[in-house]
Image (cartoon, rainbow, N blue to C red; front, side):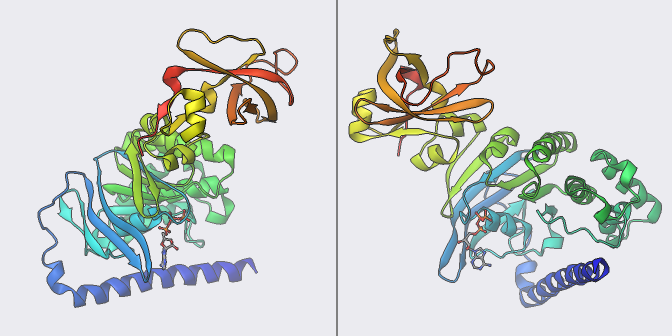
Amino acid sequence: MGRISERFLQIWLLARTVSLYTYWGVRKLLFKGEYGMTSLPVQGSGFVSLQGVSKSFGDVEAVKGLDLDIASGEFFSMLGPSGSGKTTVLRMIAGFESVSAGSISIDGQDVTTLAPFDRTVNTVFQDYALFPHMTIQENVEYGLRTRKVPKPERAKQAADAIARVKLSHLADRLPHQLSGGQRQRIALARALVLRPKVLLLDEPLGALDKQLREEMQVELKSIQREAGITFVFVTHDQEEALRMSDRIAVFNEGRIEQLGVPHDVYEKPETAFVAGFLGVSNLLSGEAAKNLVGRSDMVNIRPERIRLNGAGYRAEKDETAVSGVIVEAAYTGANTLYILETEGKQRLISSRLNEEQPGHEEGFVMGDKVVASWRNHHVVTIPQ
Ligand code: ATP
């Protein structure tokens, strides 16, 4: 049974490669003229630059007029909910998907109509797609072999790439003899060995459990730093994006809602969507905002900025305090999340770091009367 499924995977991998090459071969013949113009001057200033890029699938407008510049050596993340268009953007940069409008350049070269294998990029997918019948060493050598790199040289380069992901001791094993995390690292080594200028990563850690995922996040980041390669990383995990990226683009419905360094995207969200998508928020507007913060435009207060005090607490200078009752408490290990209802029936979420062991600190339970307080400068206005 194991053999049959391996055989099936082998055939599937071969079919995938052949169909891709056939598609681009035919395209190349049909668009010969376009291919003659692949070194057009570039409009954007980024190492990877997208200018007015759109993509439609029938009636679905997956990506809408995107302008994006990614710097050389940057760890750039595209973050957003399912269906927001981030994978489509990645696939257009890779060349697996054509653009409906606009242009894409990499390192000063217009690649809009280039085949994937003519672009200086490599992609790491969530499903690894390692050749099951080849050892780890052979898997990593494979790309160099197709580039006709002589045997001793490719063996050395592959060994170096495997060492970089710290798996030299497993080089003679077959993929099925590795754990999921180890397979993912090999997929990374296989991409790195080709020394792409840009590495595209499509939810590469999506299949891993939380602990392994967090370990891999640290490793991935340090590999990127050492290798100095531009990483374009797709994820729907906001913590992962915040932890790893130099900059984050938050996608919503085919557009970028906000682009910035992690700190700014979290602390200064420009839209209600971004505030809600990154972390937990207390979004207030209209009457509720007027009652609690004295103005009616849309504002946000992060739960970790709302402190809970015993009844009778009085606001300090530059602070606001409101009375309420705890209506929900959720212990999450490092933190406890409390929901309180103010006298004006507004619900607020407060997060408290569990610095002490249970029983050693003053906690709150449902029904407790409390006073919530926050510093006035922790109220962030949402511009749109
Ligand atoms: P996820 O996190 O679920 O992968 P995403 O943000 O990467 O989502 P995309 O995969 O880019 O989103 O999809 C964007 C939109 O385009 C979705 O509405 C999707 O259904 C649609 N879409 C993507 N690929 C195709 C396709 N080949 N044919 C038709 N529609 C597609």
